[in-house]
Length: 385
Ligand SMILES: Cc1ncc(COP(=O)(O)O)c(C=O)c1O
Image 1 (cartoon, rainbow, N blue to C red):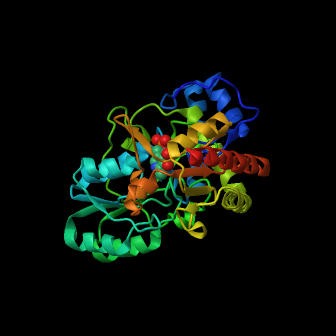
Image 2 (image 1 turned 120 degrees about the vertical axis):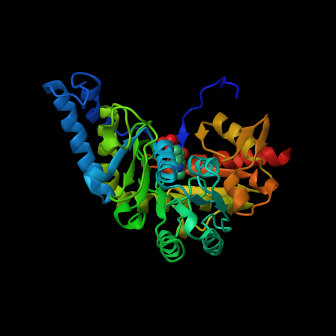
Image 3 (image 1 turned 90 degrees about the vertical axis):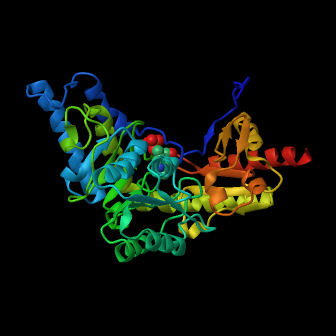
């Protein structure tokens, strides 16, 4: 896209599902490990031991928030790696078939497809179609090795009924490993409960106020998993490579804060979202929420706006200083609708009218009001042709 030729008066950031601003506390916790405490945590001397201690403390914190043992936390370079490790690592360890719903993030979907796995249908709400999942598990019989179902969808925000998925897997594919991509949910939900049925859980720091390029895969003990990266045998032989100590410290700090603020942040985001939707319905009209909001992440508002092509809307919003997302992607020069919306059965033309506004901890009422006004102005322009 061409660079902006002017600076808007203010920037309204409503793309928190893409990434979130780094928390000051996380930055401050990280700084010593980018400066004086630079040691390699695998070493034996005092500088190395200082880094090791920080890594161990961060691991304890992450484990406590996620409801697992410290030895079950495998630090990775973010959510994509955690997802790939989960799917490919189980298949490498025991063979068999990987299964996932069609609305998974590409980090899961493409990994499942890369090992010739089975993709099952998604319901119109964006959550896995349990009947189709059951039929696929029956069809594949004992060959199912891993089932991956996201805790909540990154585009429309819908929660997966994870305990129902777990019950189906236990009943129809006993022995298969359940993985959940909790990258979007981790900043909002208590994963100690929500992700408890899953043996493998992916989390990324940058979605909850931590740095980019760091995250983890929870690997509950006894889960078959072969590493993707070979080398020094770090992370108990499950992920070789010198750990990003500063990143991990920032991740743990952000995750701890997100857990402390969870209830209040969720209520606040829900109220801002209701205000935003109310204003959009009133000022724009022809606005259809894509997911049932009572079963979606609190910060997600994904809508289709009649007569407004999503990519064109984004350009006008950006011009007005509003940062949002359409969930579609430019492939081979043409704008392609999101695979999530298509999986939900939304017709292609309608899927191209998508707009995702995602609220975060720094969003204010003034942001929401300014965004609604900008969407209204952009919609009027687009509809005028
Ligand atoms: C649900 C989900 N899974 C995985 C990822 C990838 O995470 P990362 O950006 O840390 O690689 C994302 C990021 O958008 C996501 O939303």
